[in-house]
Length: 455
Picture (tube, rainbow, N blue to C red):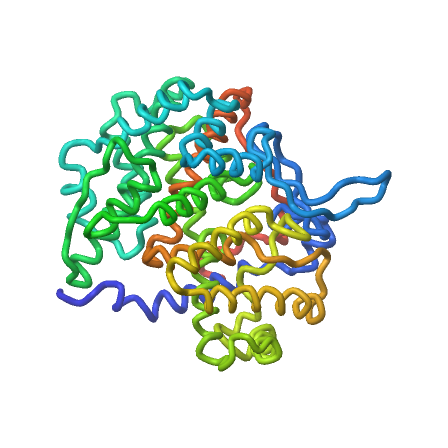
């Protein structure tokens, strides 16, 4: 009676899994023969066009007549170059995430008064329902904070008297609440897990109304609630850079697909979280950090580029690190020559590495990037250029901020929920009641039915 049912059925499930795999494998050539673009990307790596958006634009080439010319990557939020947006709030010494959220949701830059009112409204939404932390987060701590986030989002449905109302004012209100609550759920979920599973001290700091999102994250996470201005400004920058990246990335497209069914906001955002949780989407910076730690153990001189190249060559040959043959943080699905987010972040990483006395590690990261680009080009057949992406440095930034790896992907979600919300609202306004339903071609062979006694 006390035996674990999962243990009892392990052998049975293994047999069934073999049958399942045998009868579900599709011949790879059928995708090519029928011009099916797996992953919704054509043979040249271009995304299949499935929609229109005014929220952001990811640009990697320009046209000269009929010739496509690769260029340094450009990212625009609502038509504004991300470099100009960052330069604007940085020059004023302001935090930029709240302004970015306003821009993405409203479609225009706020005035000083509009930004102040919007920031105050976001801060007011940081109030959780009574006993939510105790009943939802502390009672069932999860080892994965993305699970905690998804569960918290879905639970909010029960606290919302207008949960199924998909009118734009109501959806906007729901989205702003979620944007405000994501940092709290992520951090409280981490603190709860560390208390119950690692016997760490439990402390819950309520957020402060007068602090920005980035400041509050550091304030709530640290036992003494202290942080430097540079730390908060760089975390804020990371949130801005991750807030949005076009409608075609996996989690944002998920938001569009689920929203097109007419479902509630909580279901749509929970689905996006499930997508981002996948290591192919949201876990790249963790892979970079683990790869660099492995390189540290096997490369004696971090300034010896020949030694670095030799070890990276082993990684590409699947002889080292995780044997996947990948140099993580290098290359992007869209950008060819450079990722503008990485370019912006790199300059601030240098400043933080000085404050944290980790300039040697920063030099190693730069050396890895310098060596990896020509090495990948030489060793691999690729249809476009290779350059570091934003994840190459973001994990290093988070580690310098003392943020645990368990929060790396949730931080991505804390930022990207702004983009998901903007796309959900845009989709509801322009959907024309169309549910997203792409076509799949049936390639199964016809079979005559066989009576069970004759099988």
